Amino acid sequence: MYGSGLWSMMGTALVFLLMLIPGIMGWGKEGHYATCKIAEGYLTGEALAAVKQLLPDSAEGDLASVCSWPDEIRFHYRWSSALHYVDTPDFRCNYEYCRDCHDSAGHKDRCVTGAIYNYTMQLSSYQDSIVESKYNLTEALLFLSHFIGDVHQPLHVGFTGDLGGNTIIVRWYRRKTNLHHVWDTMIIDSALKTFYNSDLTIMIHALQQNITNDWLNDASSWAICANNHTVCPEPYASESISAACKFAYRNATPGSTLGDEYFLSRLPVVEKRLAQGGVRLAATLNRIFSSQPKIAVARR
Ligand SMILES: [Zn+2]
Image: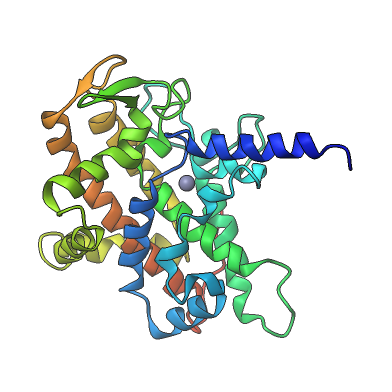
């Protein structure tokens, strides 16, 4: 409606301000970039061709460059906000799709694992070229790539009572922040500064080296989905809440100061989750875009 110009300006300003609030986004930009960059290295020719065809022009053929897009639009696409995480019951340290996958209003399937199933199903229509897809497959690709990253961030499968660590105020060295933001961004930022000359490319290279060396035995199993399913976010979410309890929440009570001890013991967890997210995103895209006949997307 005209005459609502001021409101719309205020709305825009509010959206902008909200985007500046840390701690509600998901892995930060670096984390998502790393996950998608690692995935790019494991795509089959078939999957890479499909990905390149679906990417928006602005990506210039690089999936990693647009993997944070769902965070940038989550306040414009308000419906998408609940799809970045799943909340689990306080202190239970486990995850169950039927119990946990809903938004705060109780709508079923509206959580990160539900979104991963949904966008995989949409992308699986890519090859039915006879019927034009009823979905926006470019958006589906960007959402899926982003959410497979998010489900690997332990506090994206955190407790309901503290909103995945968002309400746990701590200090990261001298800086006041919240525990969720520490895991999205601060551990990665500190690692970049301390060990990787503030260069994300060097960090990603180190993760790629680990996948082919130290983690080699594990890494081959990361890519597999039980029962030949196209996608399998359930174990990823279970691993995340388990890591949240074992590493993220431990010794990070409200008001505590997290420093070297916490940083150095948790960094390997963050690095492994970024690598797992990358390997699994590639494996999922490879299955989705494979011309081999496949079993339909199974939803639990
Ligand atoms: Zn996110």
